[in-house]
Image (tube, rainbow, N blue to C red; front, side, top):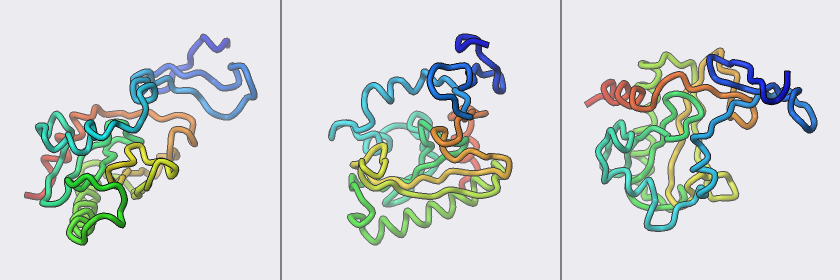
Length: 187
């Protein structure tokens, strides 16, 4: 098979690495052209275009917000590692965890716990990866605004990040996932 003949992975075209030029590896390539805008335009917005500052100004549906607290809010990641990948962000534009107030830290923790319970209920996941990348050098996609990742995991989910695991498919649309989580969120 040539590099131009695609295999199918759950209906999505992929290429086997052994058929591509260069040093063969064990990975398949899942082409995701929708991420090109994210890659080409850089990951760091200018100071007036912070997506985590702009999101609370939008409708919950438009911004993919599932819950709002007093000091922080929860929204779906626009570029998720798995379906149901949530972010917990303070409303205040602060870059790192050590700059957050005690109230922000407490609410980020509380919202994280509720998010885990809700996602477990609606998706029947088996576990979670939770973490914060602090600063560009640590891999923060938006380094200037603190955010915590909550990534649901399943027993048969062998992928951690697409870069490491080689192939990632997301079986549900973001709007559907947002609605399901928001409706299950306790009042």
